[in-house]
Length: 395
Image (cartoon, rainbow, N blue to C red; front, side):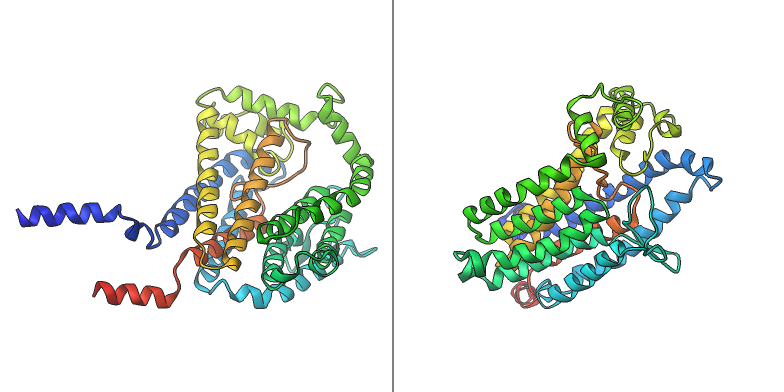
């Protein structure tokens, strides 16, 4: 009788608030991330094997390179999860400075040695066979730097000159070279993340309205020039230039539509056989819809909701403002990229070229995304002194 009561009490205690505060978020975060990465590798192989073979490469070419990215990402994840997240306050300026220098290298006139022009843009640095996309680093760098400075400037937010403009100057310095690559969507995303973190720290709404109004003429001019203007017109008129600007979106919708409820099956799709350009990257969401159907899409969305929900939950439980801001910024980064990528695939957002985190081909994005998970884990774990106290209490 006593043993039965003890077993019952132990079962009940697992669901108590005390146990649920012992770091269940870490296990859940690791689990959801692992499933998403494995699912991403499966989808990537299905979406890229044909394209690799048409370029006289092994069918596993993109898969193997992404697997290397996963290995590097695991190292970054474990390091970031083990270090105290407060270290990022000390490293905020160095990380920002290094990222800015890398971005400037990309847009230097005549620089093609380390920054070759690919598909009409200078977005990658290549050194000794290693490729890095600095704009991916800029996303997390701006979150870390903004969070760090926002913690220090808590008492100055009322002032436009000392409390808001310093942020705008640095954000603009990061956004400008990214826009010149050209990659306007990533530049806007960097600015959005900075504004979001500052707003969550207590920034004044009036200051953000002032910045938006001041920047609208420049943004409007950029959106209506060159290929951006063509994409914007094509978005509002899907029947325009179906064989050109709207071709990718049209093929993406065909892929998703042909998948039906259960999908056509692994490696049995048609759009990844050369009909949909960048199927393994910018439009990999469409490949999920074609291969795995509506069920695959629901599964993918559920995984992202899991990571994003855990991220915001960790932010709400963080022990200090720095942890709250970092977790909020990271969760918003993953959420915004995933949402925009999916909306583009469905034709509900202008074609931008944003990767789907953890799934799209691209080792820079994968490395940064996994490092972000490591930082979330670090924030979710209670400080060592608290863990020691709990172990002593249990003893």
